[in-house]
Image 1 (tube, rainbow, N blue to C red):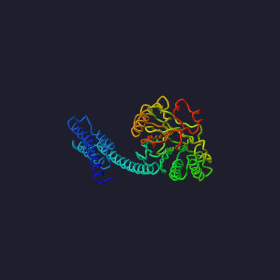
Image 2 (image 1 turned 90 degrees about the horizontal axis):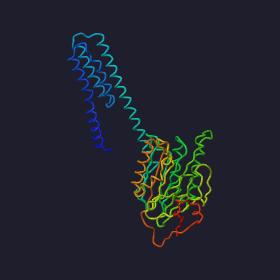
Image 3 (image 1 turned 135 degrees about the vertical axis):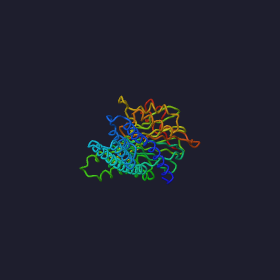
Image 4 (image 1 turned 180 degrees about the vertical axis):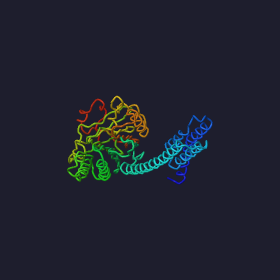
Length: 399
């Protein structure tokens, strides 16, 4: 943050505090004037304790101390005005002094905790940027947008992850969800992200890539002691996506993850192949060509990738978030606007309280494939497994 921005922020805070400090000052003045102009049987001086107590809600220790000192001065004036300081007056003065000192201590502790929280947040934000790098708006022929919502209100990093990698004339994408909690889950997510960024450039097919990522996760988990049952139960559901630049096709390998949605001309369809691979980290995966599913991905089509924190979000009646139904409402939006709409709608559905981390990616093909390329069937049996919503999703191949 630049010096000018810091000074502007300090001035803004000072102005807001300066406006609020008028409230305890007005209380001190009003109580003093009313006490002076009322009969001796009406004693309002004890009410001065309200001023320093109220100031702690918006001011720091110095301002709170000043208000406490003014209140103490006003009470001293009211006690000495008659010329007779009684034991009751002394007790009131001592009580107000003790309360003012206590209010200052509360402000000091609160400011210290706020500074510690700000430092923790800055570390969390740095960790999030290191773990989840911001996606570019445009990558090759694709428009991209993403949204990440942590279940914990003060958290920036959770168990969901996503990343993209450019390998030659194609784009590879991963989205995943760590099935675990604590530091081990974050470490597992970081391990998978690093492995993907390296392995995405080294393996020709998505099943081979899935096998390499599984081995990386298994090696990471093997470093935990056998007595750590929580770490031993960790695994990662993941989805690997590959989109060539110059072919109207996309390929996907699903490792126990929710299947993607495809938006085509306003219609929402589920992309699901007949075979899926097990989640990463459960056992050593052998590259299996059957886990690769290819489908047409045309100009203007949009793919929606998400974690189960999206579809498992519940409303007040415990109903799940109807993602496919809501996606249809925003189908004509560009990726950036689309994820913003879904994020706002999801938070409204869950009333701001998500039960799990939620991530969503929107990928739209912007550039048309090269002329002369056609969509052809790879495996006719894929159509036999396709449901009614997938009738026009045909497995395709590069030529």
